[in-house]
Image 1 (tube, rainbow, N blue to C red):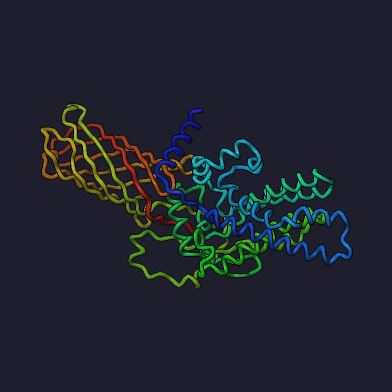
Image 2 (tube, rainbow, N blue to C red):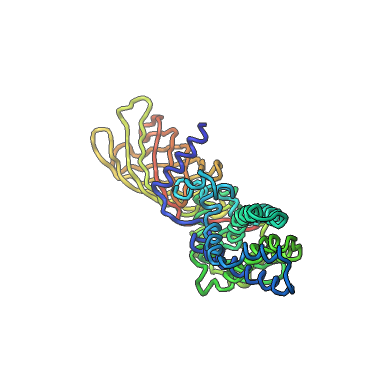
Amino acid sequence: MSALWFRAAVVGAAVAVCPGTAWCWGTAEHQQIGRTSYLEACTQIAAAVAALKPPPSGIATRLEVACGRNVDAHADIYGVATALAGDYLANPSEFVSQAGAWRFKSNKSYYLLALENSEHFNPMSTRSWEDYHGKAIEEALAGARVDGLDSVRRFQLALQQSAFADHFLHDSFSAGHMGFNRTASSAAASKAFHDAWNARGRIVVDRNGDRWVTFGDGWLDRPENESGLRHVQDAATMSVRNVIRAFVFGERAPDEELALWRALPFMIQAPEMKVDVVDLFTRKDDSANRHMVPLVTTIRPARKDTVASVCFWSAAPFSNAGDRVAAATGGLDLAVPHVPAQVYIGAGGTLVEPGGAHSVVVDTGLLFPLGIGLSGLVSVQLNATVSWLFPHEFATVIHGEAQMNLEFGNFLINVRGGLAEFLPHPRTGWYGAFGIGYTFTAAGGGTI
């Protein structure tokens, strides 16, 4: 129960501060791909049925159910379903459940699924597609073996499974969903890494040897993503066509299933994303000449690079609680090249000092990540920081503390606690802080 309460608190905070941005293709983009793929699949299936002279009555009846006079409405429904699947609904049964109806309108549900979304990232996304796609074909075949309303009901169940499958299929072609280990990365690092690669684009190669450039969220219809759009649209069409074909003809098409498998991203351009400090002084390589690697070998996690934060901290010696110092500071966390640490530089002023004076505060320190939990929603780090106070006699507060971050999107909320040493008159005491941060960039990723 306590774990559920904690997750609810995290999601509630995310809803309060996070903008309504998606982690994969935007909702409208999923709808567009899903609708277009359904219409094109029906056109191709109808042509195959028309080639039968005459088509058996059962096949003609099932074609009318799937692709008949209401095909435009069915395509609209399918497009919406692919957009809702995974981002708003946790499983296909929620399309027709009371819980699903609640999730449609719930920002909390959206953020919960969006924040804990490792299965939306390749190669896990292709595995999710395989699972749901296989179930969709099984339901479609079951629908072909029965008649009347039972047949219709089975086909609707098949489309619900297929909508989930195709949502993850769409994600598999998104540039920001490749090239790093989402499971081992914190939520904020993943979001920043995801956004950067969506805009930069990646070179992708499938098992047929076809090579193209794909982008991500918001880039579906841009000229730069012309080849990316064509490949994801063709794959989505093949996917839903497999399901409709199984229903209409009552048989699987193994060759078509393998053709779709060969069209999925397999090799990708996956350079390590350098930290900002290094990237400023290095010449960017021509991406067309970068080495291509198998997607499944890109197992290095992303790490937070540049983080802006504000912090309210307080410290006091154990020997005299009245000598408490409280301050407000703002600064930047900057990743250190080749070292699993970040440099912190900040400045601000004291709010409380002994005697009522006020000082300028300059913070410097090193931040060492320790680990993540709850699918990256929580990260823990160890800080070693010095706060320099000018011109007060409490010239220096040296503090070491543990910090826990709640991460949602690019945002961080953190709490800190530890020990402090007061100089120039040495006294040991306590240190506590509360802060809010925003992750601008991420580094890392790439292959081993």
